[in-house]
Length: 227
Image (tube, rainbow, N blue to C red; front, side, top):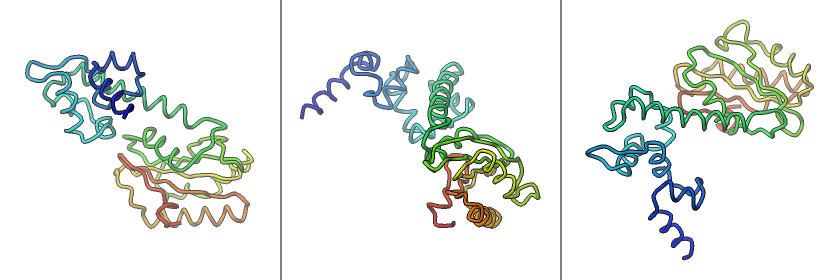
């Protein structure tokens, strides 16, 4: 009951006032948007404009991927507001990426997946990146091994495991993007993954997962039961 009363108090305040009193993390998504947008239009109040944006793009994740061209087509969003929105999302994404993937941090497939979504977003070339881990799943290094399709002659397990040996890595997670934006694994993706796992077993280095990065989502071959 006390929590409900407190929430009603937060809602009754203007977003900036509420953020100062209760902390920015207490703000709703729509209130955070109001703080960034600052003003409404002749036909829409600030709360209405912020809510319309969220409704149109469904959620913050999709809104963060909107281009300047797409945003400026929205009633009430000019070039300045569109750039400010993109800048706010980009700052958050960079801060998250820098906080997540650094040496010594314990990694997981989901952590790496979300990080790589930001890193490889809009990339027009297929890249294969390996995150090398120690026995506690702590990150040793993130390294781009090569650029090109997995059916290329350069895509060979020896390049991946040579670096693993040099780093004394015990485990690794491989990541590659599909410039098409689709995350369905190809036959080559699956064959390459199984080949990596087999080579790793011989060398005593575990390939924990293979992540495929699309335009706005990723796929874990391990979680899907493909490998």
